[in-house]
Image (cartoon, rainbow, N blue to C red):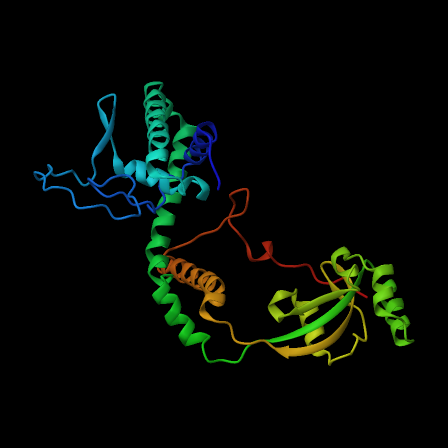
Length: 318
């Protein structure tokens, strides 16, 4: 069972608060008037007591120079902490977070008294931070409704469920730095050379070369386009007729077998589907916001752009 010292807890809380995570949506719920922690086992009913006075839905938990710190501020700050800190009992975490909020409030007041809020550099940072919060707010407004479990399940049922699984290939490769070496390896393989031995001798891919170049099964989207196109064009047992160049170097590829992967279940597809939905929604939100907005772009020196600024020079004469 993991335990935390008071010193490590305070440090984790301080680090999280310093980087400004207190504006994230609350994920730790506090019930007004409820005990900070409930025991799991049921207890005998207590004798009837007089009704307790009503508790404010967002009680004041501290006063700093006459200004209140509300429970909601503590809750929001706790929501921005690292996962290991959030998993701690609220009654243990609360005093650390509250102390950090008090210190933060005191530092902000001291900065204002020193006139730092009027410093041009500080004002630019405040404006930039405000812009980031507003940008995040409008994106969350559009994204949050479409990434609930219900929304993702509906998207899964529409786009994924009942469809055939994606094709995969099992391949191996030898990666070298230059085309000449790759061509030599290809020629050696055509003469009956051993792929595993040549991979261990030449390949610059340490992970795969230790396995004789074996990459296991993969889908098209798992590899860079040039590699994927070449591999999926081969039949079982075939080797690329010519080396394939990618950003990593030159590849000699052999496909061992093809298979159709089973369609993923919702739990397997959830993360990828969520990422896809988020990307689509962000793009749609930006496109909608751009509608009707006049945009002008200038050169780095502030001068107006000309059509010739981005024109590419003609290829050299042969």
